[in-house]
Length: 296
Length: 272
Image (cartoon, rainbow over all chains, first blue to last red; front, side, top):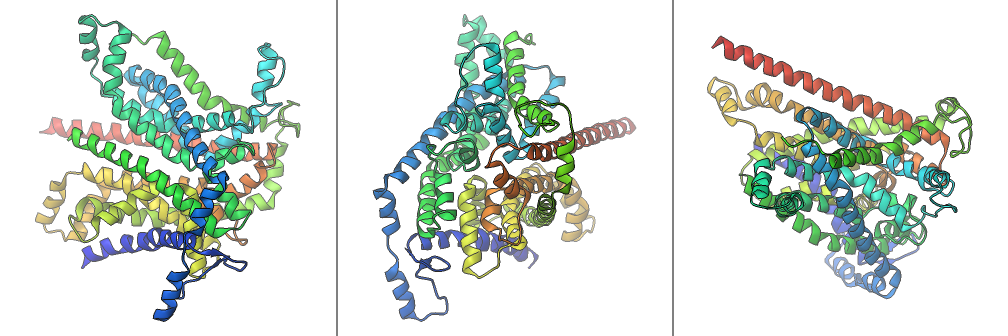
């Protein structure tokens, strides 16, 4: 009996507040836009008769999804989200790997402090960390002032409201997610393997390329997914750092909902975003599972 | 051991500079006397004073704290239950769906979670406000809590619990007297994680809040969309200070506990 409640309570909670809402999104994505509150038809009348239920299903259609394919704004937004997420994941890897590598090489007594310094920004508000870059990247911002002062540039650069600012924002906010799994993989690496490689005639670089990189592969994969997946649906960063030309699907969904108040289209956008995300999520789960099995 | 090379030292220095310089600049400019955020006009704390008089911000902060405390407490209870189910309950009908529902919210884009919950609340005719934000936050935080707690439960030595049962404890007593104290650090860090996730959340709160309740992130977002302002810098500085203090205290406490435990174990080893 106790076991039943233990399972039933969280199960019911998640079903009601996680699973059911998804079916509602799906249903509204298949409904028509209407000028009412809530702004869609048909509404499901749960107490309705069999005929009402039949009418309800008859009124559902794929119009909204067809609409997404006809207006090239949505295509472009999906593609540009994929592009931005991919590029910023690679950039995060390029910035994060050397840091994780250096942390793994650092003396043992430094490691807890280094670890805390990596985690600390993660506890700080996401919004504030993105906001911090608004003041740095703006036209008369800190970065431009600094570069003008050093004489590297003679005209202020336009960085804010471009995709470059979005890349910087994503790399900055998601960096800990990349560093931690790579560090975890590198920390376990047996240094004698590298010595063996060097004894067998590898240069230091070859030993790094042929031994260290393959052995940290799992960390690299996990870190990349942890950055790529949330970056794809990101809203705050493109909305604060990106410009009107920065197309990202999270932003489109937000605008469709709050500005255009077109709920059916917003729901259809959400459904398609979810379908795109399923592939990386499944790949990520498989990678994690393989890793867990390998460790046992 | 290899020598700590120049390359490593450089990448650590540059890496930490990248992580911390933006926040340091933000903190410095919160003490700027000028309204113009990029021109330094001398030291002043007047923005902190103005912040303390800004009723809208104080109200929003109060709503945010209430939501965070309640939602993270609900999330901790539900998440711990879910972790026990995942690790201990064995096979039951619908187990795959259950673990799917625990892991899916972790990778779900916030815009989708927010949209779907809003549509649910409207569908069942619930007024949006503090209650709906709290329910939404409790739902996604419980998944984080259950991941944290279940990783502790997996490494937990079950024979301790069996010993308690052999010595005459009921199932519930064994849980309360043996299991709970051992997983307590994970439960506490789960609560802290849920609390900060709730404090931090903009997107889900925007979808699920109504005109009657505004949280601090919503307030900050609508202010910074218009550009950088010294008042927001002051507010950010206060929030960064609280978090830094909390994280450092927590890590010192856990370090001291680890040292104490080691000492006790050594003492016990000497006695035998």
